[in-house]
Image (cartoon, rainbow, N blue to C red; front, side, top):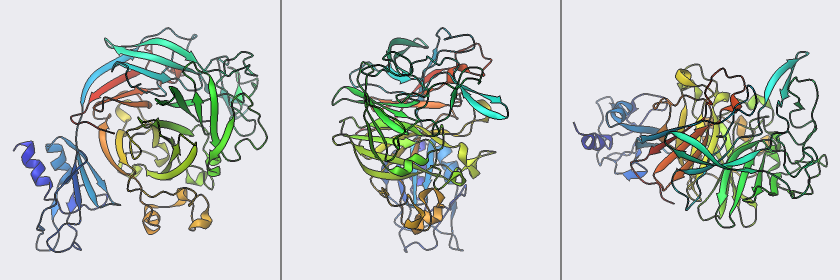
Length: 488
């Protein structure tokens, strides 16, 4: 049977049972009309005019099997009672970084972010490499964060993907308009900002504590604003979002209210306390992981990598992650949404806390591509997906569930049933790329971008090869052609 015939069959599906492999007709549906909504590649499909039920009032239809036969992704939205079918992309390119090591045992690194600038050739991108080489050592029964190259400068890299290779075309070291108090030059470092708040930085042996850098950044996301030809970087330390000139000079920094508490001074880079205060409750190394700017330069989005520890680390296994919306003209936060990660229970030996957001791309002011992944690699990987999400029907929760007093529980403490009871609607989400099915070999897909509306590019962060025995660099950029176009 042809795929078109299966698509017609899909419109006859009446409902889905949550968590089931098969669809089950809704026995409470209005006579003659299904309650379930259907879409294909984001476009609505007409539901059947008459219901199709067995004598017992329910109909079992193998929706996931049907999607496999049609070679489509299928997603079930229990909040909207909807089924989404999406055509799968085609892998079009694999490119590997071949670059000299930074030091013995420390490889060159890019890949903690990825963005494509309008007007550039389709194979030209910009990327970053977080805070630099770092590791962990046990010293006197305590785990210490080490920086074997403490003078490393966080940098934006212009790269080219061609002939199977990632080529570094240009380097843009991040700097202040003055002297950084740690480096002694204009260049910043990758160590933390505030003693007692950020991880204590140590030398390679874990013996000597390094100085904290008020301008230090742990870069995770990169976005471009065409309105003023500048970059914005998401930083895990703050968590913060940093405004950067094209030459790498830091302009300003958006941080949560109460971030500094008079413990740090940043006269060279004003810290604007505009993010909600609750963002100070981040889990260390799980901060502002992703940032995206709409093509018109009007709106910026930032996503946290993991749930906030709100009220404490008991929420590490929460499925609720936060996405914040910012008006770039005023730098005011205008909305906040709850992103629901996939349920770890549907996978094998996967902890909920190991499911994270690693990057995002802003298509427009309500449509985002989100990189959601687990912490496994190779054959053990189960979740490496790019979802397209729609915020237009999602609830703006800005300032409403930061404290338990708002509804008995904080946002992070809520269950799915709690969210439904509070009428909190998350964004809708549908799969546009499943990298596990393409056998992407690395754990950390941390860069995501869209080119010309129909090419998705992803890249991984190799963590500078710290702890790796591989002779290869371990950084790879893959491109995928979509069988449709995602338009602003």
